[in-house]
Image 1 (spheres, rainbow, N blue to C red):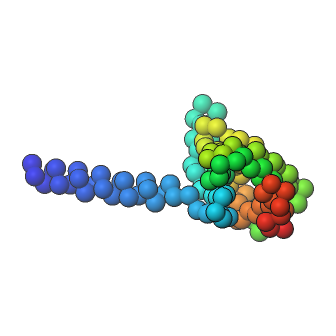
Image 2: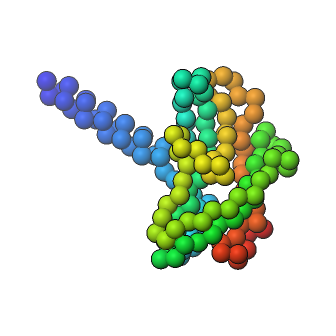
Image 3: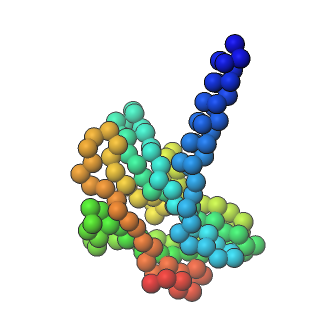
Amino acid sequence: MFKKIFLTCVLSVIAVISFAQKNDWKEYFGNNGISIQFIYAECHQPAKGLHNEYLLLRLENKTDQEVKIRYKLSKVYNGIEMTGDTADFSFTVPAYYIMESNCDDMKEGLYIYSKILDLKPTSVLNSFELKNLSINGQIIAR
């Protein structure tokens, strides 16, 4: 009996650690007031027959005033930059607010298709860049 309880506890700890490691947001840009983070997420929509991985973005405003974040989303698939697919995005983020995409709520400009999961992927996201990143009109990165 003790062995079963011990084994269950060990497996639970491993599952929690494994889940936590897969759900860590990575910082793309950050300063005292703004944080832009990303995470890779497996999104499954069986009703639509979709099993894809996406890169999801999170915009966090740590200030007491709303901020306007603008950028041009650039993507590289299979080593080739998708120049015709680059789009401008602008978000107004309220004070002390986090704006993000998730598998159930894909917000345009806050997610990037990464790869298909249930078939051999022919197109895989290698990297992304937020070009001409500006916060309240001030250019942060070109």
